[in-house]
Length: 361
Image 1 (tube, rainbow, N blue to C red):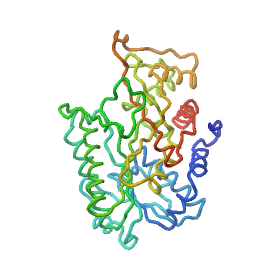
Image 2: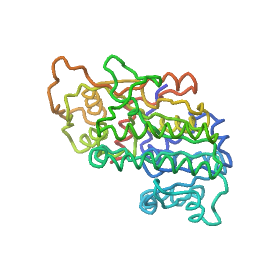
Image 3: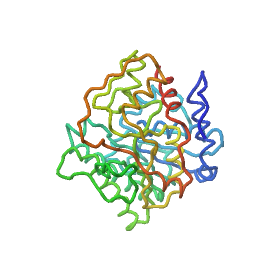
């Protein structure tokens, strides 16, 4: 089932209604009256988790609370005043690499919960620039941050722990594997510093299952691929964001490479449905790919952005394809999520592009 066109006045309201409607009611009931801790709550993933939490908390009278760790909560609250003033959301300033339960309790004072039911660890410097310029900081942020979040879960008696891992754990996808499954045993090249992000996520997953074995924490491993939606940075290393930015500026839409890589994109409202569902229902210690299985060439993506936002715009392809070189792929198999959790892509990519652009203007 594909979504209808967005509301002309508030596209995000349609998305929040979509998340509420497509997340199984048992998931929201599991969150009723619970305390949830989120790292990375002010990033792209975190913003969608907070928006959807606030909506569901109010609409269903869940009486749940979220505590968000952020390096700069004040800046985020200025840009999202409705979340900053929401009684069900509390912000704590801190560094994901070094915070602990005592820090959180001290910052919250009398408002501090003694226990948490759920921890979502979504803090990651998913930056190609950081990975290239400071791979050691990339690894430290991922690995030390995951260890700190797991120790926090242990100290606050939170059993369910959602890690937003990455499809980067698979390394380069073989050209003959159209959709990489969770049981693919490849990995990044550990002698290449460009693998810092992927190797960091692999170690983060290992930390999670070690805590599962030794402490009984129930980690959910969400291997996230590529996404689109409001709040996605349009000036970072995300091709779809760059194409939308180019289209909003009147073009041309610039493809930096030869346009042949295969990619796929899941809309952020569907992403939120998947993450909330996995937090509550996914088997612990079992990885699940998160993303769209509908692949297309990057050049096709540029064409789709043009069709959605400006049919008369020019597209510039930066390079000619190399003869005989197979295209790269970064596309997940999502069969496990569909079969075990009933999760499927609901919102088509053209609608996703239009909604992203609408809120960016």
